[in-house]
Length: 106
Image (cartoon, rainbow, N blue to C red; front, side, top):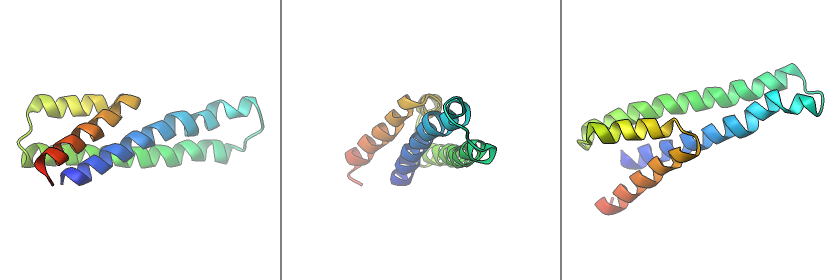
């Protein structure tokens, strides 16, 4: 379960970066430099946002499952959740879980 949570945490962080630094600039910045059809502009954010939203939901579900399965403290769960909301810092959750996997020898 920890490996799955670690991978979801990683992909959730990557999806945040893609949403903020690729899809949103395509929608809001690129039109200042060139003509971009509305379906491409809106589609980039819609697709990236949908993927990111799905991964956030899976992240939260797996966070709750790991909390129950591994008897994590509530402070750890809250810390992981809050940190996952901050774009680049959310990679820390993945690294922290990876350290725990190595410590358990899983």
